[in-house]
Length: 438
Image 1 (tube, one colour):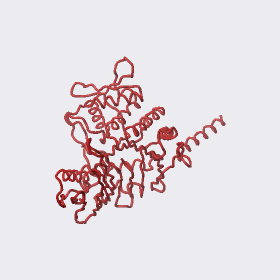
Image 2 (spheres, rainbow, N blue to C red):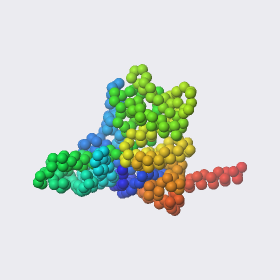
Image 3 (cartoon, rainbow, N blue to C red):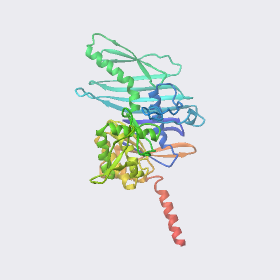
Image 4 (tube, helix red, strand yellow):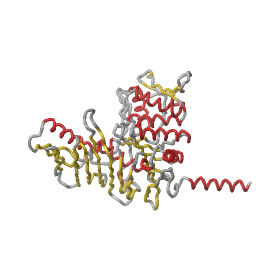
């Protein structure tokens, strides 16, 4: 779960820092830098998955086949162009940083958890520095792994003492950050303790990548465009793919192979639009998505014919349904094609999931209805002010500025809400003046 992120010289962000809560909203005009926060984090996640030293890598479409219908590789989430397209004008380097927590446990053992602090520097698309710390609790003990690496620096081991042993880590000049360099015993350490130490070392090595992989983007372009899609040989692991066509293939494969997920999404759709879904096979190893009104005996119909608004919802609900508790959903413009009443119902569902299933939502929105529904949840007591953070973004003289808006226990924003009502009031005044002239 994210706690903080910071950017330097990424696009028009000269220096921006954001603190996250259970639900975090980004609001503000178009082209004010809201999307850039998520893009920077996903770009870093993408680079860590590939492991090479470059932040941006050119990617070509693949030739598709029945066995592999995807247009782009699985690790291709976004394409922001060359490095020159994302570094702030007049600068050569970017800094991306984040903090967050990871929790995991085994059934018969105490809960273990990590808190990761990671900052990377990239110049001319090459990794030039990374540093950070991982604070951990493990088997009723705790400790901290600190590391630092700069280009040209020799790979000197980082040492961590724990439970009668010394673990060594060597920082690397790539987005894997560091690798193990062995474990040395200090005396007689029982075999089962050594096994736990080696497990801990492996988890520490993976922890920066694990935090990045706990971020799940839901892109703003969504919807079914064809009556059916190829059924893949294995279900997709997520919907985090660059183009809508690939996301659709992944969506239908996941629903087709996972009946529990299908039932769960049906239950959510029932609450939102009074529809349930079915995922039958079609000739030629294809699959489609059908809908049926709740409590109706009418014939099933293609889900894509239910309307543009309803077609948004599976692409929002399925990623939420498969994400583990404690992880973060980066939801872009949930209001797209949704009626105001539906926007409010969707927010109510997200608020319930944030509490009942320990989800974290970072929501980028232009919708007054989304914002007001979150504030209304505070006023009703469904959320506390400490559960939410609202940031207003604007661009002044080519530089993005962000400021946190303070929310009271009554769901009111101190100092008023910038940017949302002024346009409506201006239009109302112009309309009244026009009526006077007639």
